[in-house]
Image 1 (tube, one colour):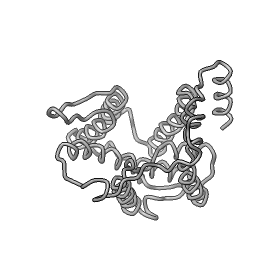
Image 2 (image 1 turned 30 degrees about the vertical axis):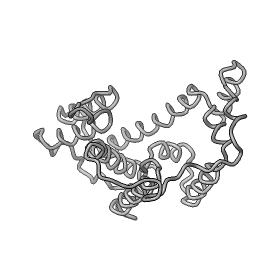
Image 3 (image 1 turned 60 degrees about the vertical axis):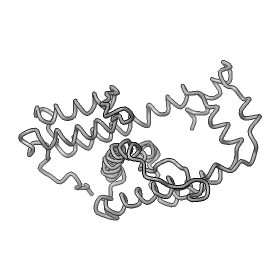
Image 4 (image 1 turned 45 degrees about the vertical axis):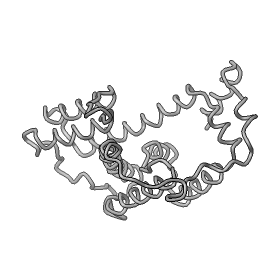
Length: 245
């Protein structure tokens, strides 16, 4: 928060903030919500299906990774309790409901894992309170416009820290589980995933469907793990889900 406030004040001093949207915004402004069979008629679109399925693979991969990193950060085995099947089901149901009323897909966001690692605040009551607070704030148009006025450079600086913590936690998990990156198989898989995921590689499938970024990286990572020989070297001697007391 000090970083965001300091960056915002600095941006204000150098004159790169436009307050016009904040002044023009209504104080109370309900978010746009659509209602199935009232605002629109649901239909099955094959093109959209082919676009969204690869993204679902990414969100599932992210969900599992986040749960594993979160277990390490908090010191409790969330893969076992409440269980990966329950948390993925929660993600899926939330995405279905959000999509039906015009919202974005829901998933476990790695940024929040970074926040937990930085603040060391693990209370579910704090998370639930933040969710309720966010819903209330979504009806305040002035606040939404104010948040949008934060310069990209400021939010980018915060994102560097948050995403850096996520990446570092993932690497720490590999190290803690004694995954040997000296093995060519592990090095090849991790290197290709990193380059494709960060480099923006794209595979075009037809005129309207393309697989890129994290979706492509996740799919190729799964395929490489299955087809490359010596699969046993990709596993540590202790369980990946073992949480130290």
